[in-house]
Length: 144
Image 1 (cartoon, rainbow, N blue to C red):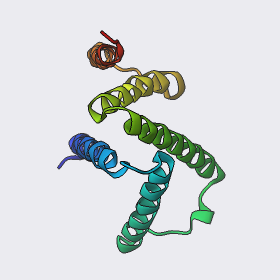
Image 2 (image 1 turned 30 degrees about the vertical axis):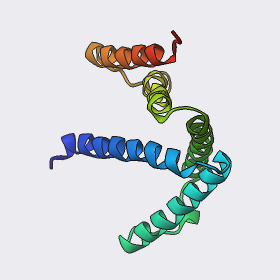
Image 3 (image 1 turned 45 degrees about the horizontal axis):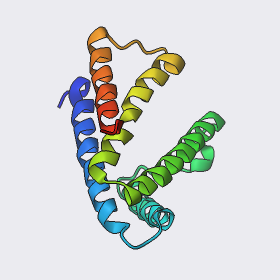
């Protein structure tokens, strides 16, 4: 697999696992508080990733990471936690087939934020696809 296209396969796997996350979480949160469910999910992730990082020999002392890395990964962690809390709450009270697509509005926001903060410049074709995602979210959100 050449590295210029490897990202695409990882992204497809991410989408598959994200879809599984929605369905498994919807089943798993039945009868319990969504915040407790988020905590359990997070604990599982910590254990599994710790084992994975250790097993693959990728462990290094996190205290030796640069301050900038700590700040931005910390902020990313806070954003992830907030996203998960909101996502699980939405899954608990809504249908997974409606919640998950609306959650993907994040794709549109990532594009806008990437332009604003990272200087990325999507092509017209890419903006067209992003606009279609936004339109799809609107179609799902508008009540009949």
